[in-house]
Length: 180
Image 1 (cartoon, rainbow, N blue to C red):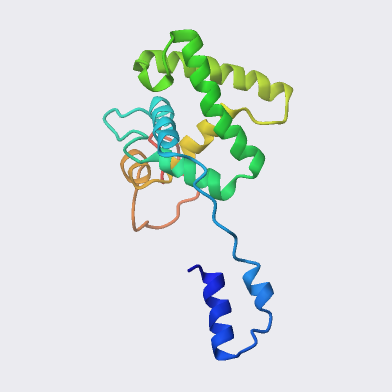
Image 2 (cartoon, rainbow, N blue to C red):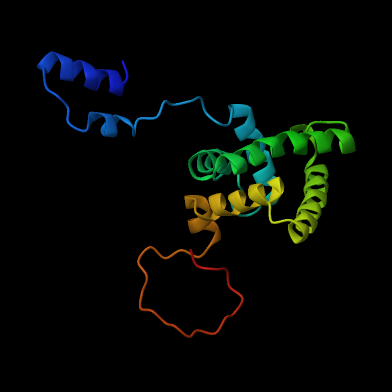
């Protein structure tokens, strides 16, 4: 039984009229299935890992960026951006099959990097012509956001100090990594 039916049943059984009940219940949206499948999340993880690979520091897969991308897109993107991202998965796989005769997930690291570099250049050219984002631009932005806001990205890649000391507004830059 869902929450809406439960509230109606309680109101009927207790004989109570629920003032503003329709307004309250209008906030209940029927939940559709997830926007991204597990295969989509695995795919997004591969794209993210190609953008931020594991080296001496964690990579995007370590931070589970694919899950973040799916969740963020489902919760924060409008329908147009969501569809653009979903179609991007298909378009990226199609480009992979055209260039390398294999799906993106099966490519070697060098092939993935080559493909994404070419698509990134095309996305930059499109951005100069259109205001609509390219699907790869969305993927890249979500990868960076997801990684650098993750525990692994913030504590193991960026400099991290859980209890900061005093504020120093004017400090000379010496080439160190950024603070999280």
